[in-house]
Picture 1 (cartoon, helix red, strand yellow):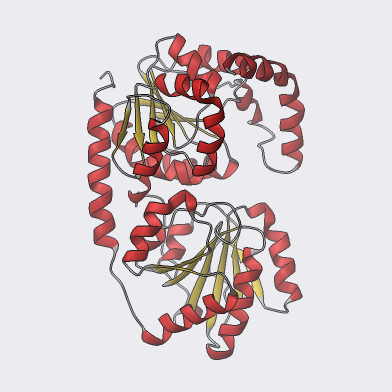
Picture 2 (cartoon, rainbow, N blue to C red; picture 1 turned 30 degrees about the vertical axis):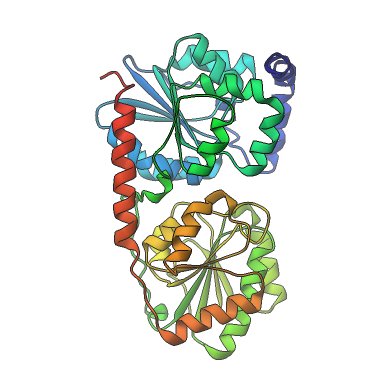
Length: 411
């Protein structure tokens, strides 16, 4: 299987450029920086020890911010991500830090991988979550570059697939010096492939990085309004929340709903749904122009989530009504808000189990269930205080993780 993958990706290499150009047309790639995914860049590697961190998108990036913050003080770091949105988050946080460089992650073809490694010559590599790229992993192993998997995760669905290629998965996993799993379930799945480099410390997504640029939102027109937020929504989930807004507004005329979509390139479609339902809406990156009769505000930028979460105690988290697996709820819970979500939350099972026991998160399958729960929380004026527990859990996980990583880092 390993040899088949190598030659298949070597052949597919010749289709990569057309594929990236197609994504540029769909506004899913940078028309200037897409070459970084081919291992081509004008950015220079500086001399000295270089730590390479890779994560796929926003959630994974935020989960390793505290680890990067710890090491970037004394080390040079190369950070790679795969999405435009994650690059925007990076620059909001690290644009003035000369010790860290961002690049878009190389595509896993042998030609690109070799070009990338010869350019950057990383001294140690940290992959995140389920980012297992065979050509990169085996190239690093063959060149004696230590690799560590942070917040290692494998879903039940992925486990079922990898069981068909048990020998290959064993070879991939044993190439890591250390695999730090985010849950006992993932640890059990990975142990099936007979590797002894696995430890379970806890989910890095319990750790909150608070030093992102985040100004408070002040507007006299929202001071007496009830605010409901639909966060990280995917297709169909916005309409679900907008219809809930319409029903709730009959009882609470001062209701304002904020929609923060997972992908802002879908905004025109969301605006179409709102227009069809004859509501007043704005699309912008702040509450500056909110009027007393504004029904819906669509947020059209990335990286501003924290400042909006502080405004609401009633938040629906998307990616959960569709079979996507949910989004990380910890940042929302940290603001002592109530969380509503659909049934598909398998990417964060242990976190949601914890929040459910604390009466913070609630599953909804219908608009009526969402409406009834929000109404109940508004009427009881019930509050919660989960923040201190999250801080304690996150601090313990971060401390344990750093102790493990220090054993492999050359200072």
